[in-house]
Image: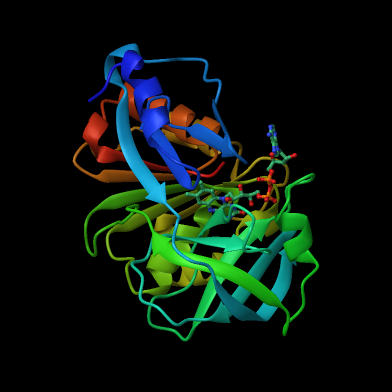
Length: 273
Ligand SMILES: Cc1cc2nc3c(=O)[nH]c(=O)nc-3n(C[C@H](O)[C@H](O)[C@H](O)COP(=O)(O)OP(=O)(O)OC[C@H]3O[C@@H](n4cnc5c(N)ncnc54)[C@H](O)[C@@H]3O)c2cc1C
């Protein structure tokens, strides 16, 4: 536990390649050498806890791109040869240049297959993703060691809640054989936004819930996933709730769950920023 006054001390201690994630503030942004806080509407000064520090200061390795496939508007799946072990839910740093700060990506592939796969969307004005989207098989990227603790245990009763590309760690879990007792709620704008939808449907059946805001589809909840959650009356307080998406998404979803009497410690967030 730390109080607000401890935060500047934390900032002093972290160095160039550290990304500090604070619970309740949740995110300390790192852009180049500058750190800044995400501007949240609600702060909880009684409860600032450092949740995770992802260190990406390992040397970068070079690898040949095997595939880089567009799967939806501005969304791609990139793969390269796997030459390391990882736990589904972990992230990897990717860069186009060893001198540049790598960007983090959840691994979206199973941990037994020969390829590492990431799912990414293009951020306009971004340093990496516009470049990455133009790459072809045979070209090179740089990557770091894996890191991260966003890990959902085999067979535990859990809800997985994702927005957009936040589905990636859950795809890795699914493709690694971890889907028993899991319910997935995925929010997306369009029907094409439900990446790996066929695979999730096949394994999760009725426990795969798609919430779409801009299009209607058969078997798809029409509206935001937050609305779906608010309407849901049978959320089990003993289940774990894993949230993955933007800072706004994780904070908003966390607040809905807390209001529904889900214990604080059963809500685990992974934030993409
Ligand atoms: C744990 C973790 C896991 C992640 N996993 C995924 C994943 O699986 N898939 C995925 O798509 N993304 C993921 N991300 C996000 C990813 O790391 C990148 O942030 C994202 O892809 C954008 O990278 P970029 O280099 O293209 O953009 P950046 O260069 O990082 O820029 C991103 C945006 O910020 C703006 N910006 C840049 N610098 C500044 C500045 N100084 N001040 C204000 N705005 C600025 C840019 O214009 C752009 O709109 C993850 C992030 C984290 C922390």
